[in-house]
Image (tube, rainbow over all chains, first blue to last red; front, side, top):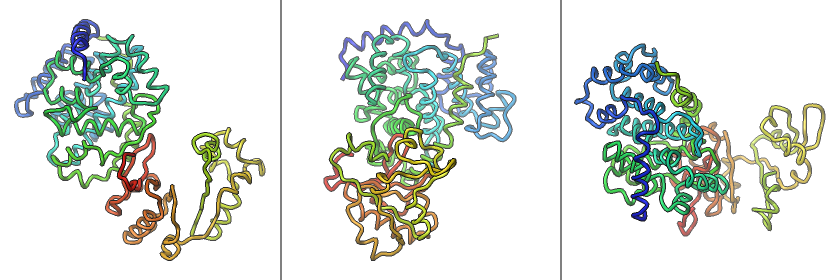
Length: 303
Length: 160
């Protein structure tokens, strides 16, 4: 449980974020578009939005060429990317690029490269698991995975003094960050992330993921999506896509209550070979590292 | 070597016994000799090389006797039910890139033997890219940082 006075402090500090990093102009309108259903979104509207920002457009095309997105011929224009990858996927690529621009790699308490590797890794795992489940929305899952830990960005930006000893202790003792956050600060990245997500007016389901991916039992809605992100997060942390330190723990994903929640929604989860899935993830790790350098490396000068 | 490293810490007071087996007599003899070349030792740290190996020649190192004496080397056919049935009380079983040569039914049989050979709470390790999917549903797949293993649940069904 979080003490009410913390909630007020978090809200007050999150207000400062708005004026700090340079959030690309297309970012918030894109978020709004993403919360609509696919049929309601017009291709031209997305292309128009992106054409406002040539840096984002160029970066989006570089990302679309990554082996992780599996296109035979890299697209040359945003419209071409939409044709070969589909609108929903291009939207998630754009979102990835915008976040990279908004929060470029600076000296943070939590190394931004490590942070983005985890976030992007989790997004990929969410999408790959969804692809194995007939009725799951892979792109929504990707977005949920990408932003699930934005609370750490908030911690680094406006709670850096409080967060520094948390990071230090977690690294030294090899224990999960959220446990040290709770014990040391009295709140976690789930609460700080939720405050930012509410300010950005992200979709309710995504806010649920950000707020409850470490405590599923507190989640009221969007349970299968929260469960998916919870499992993907754990898996990434076990396969070298964690927070940059060795976590001394082991996990039984299939015995985790999140697995049962997901299985209830998607019966075909039963046929997923988790061991093979893990090896597939290992093969994608290098691609994820490369993609992070493309998206979240030092930003090119804006023209 | 890892066991010896931990003998004064995590494994203080433990008696460690290791059984190493292969179907082929010559492989067992080679393993007994404990002589390794550059390639086999490419991932072994200098610390381990200095502490647990002696030099044979320019390119080869031999495992020291204090390590060898922890290990019993035997020929074993994993499909020999009468022998497999009598191997009990194992805490850890490593079987890497062996089951890939077996057909589905033989794999299942060997894995069931491994399950009964293990103590409750024991672990079974397979090679990279191997899976027990559709072969055994009694083991729990456990993720450790950087590796996966199959766990025989404790009798109490307690936590990991």
